[in-house]
Length: 148
Image (tube, rainbow, N blue to C red; front, side):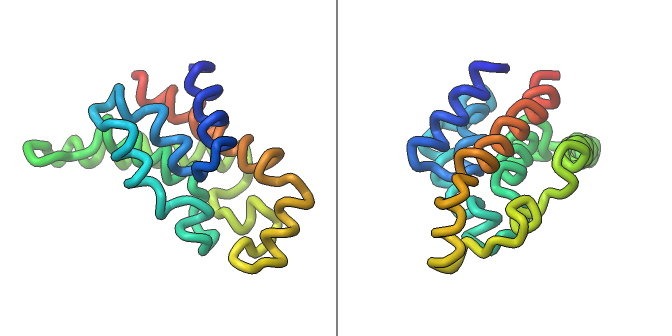
């Protein structure tokens, strides 16, 4: 697991967003190539395209859980419910750690969609100090679920 955590933070620090950084450490083992994972997760970063709704690290983890447990073309209603159950468990555990899954709340209301907000994020080093931590925690929690 710690190798995944390390790779996710490395990906994040190399210019990829939080959702990409979480999903791609699971992608290959779950049947998706890394490039496709990067593309799929791209719009989910910064709380979905800088809207600061659901944390991108959370979205990336949920995509990984869906790859493992989700209902595919030949899936069953039980597959769908299992994916929902695993997702709810992940969300509950993330909320226990951080109090919320909302990007805006995780960043104390800083608006990343404005130049001023982005400057504040950089000034406070929150990408390094907060967002990287959310990425790590999302990977750890998702790995516990995906590796079952």
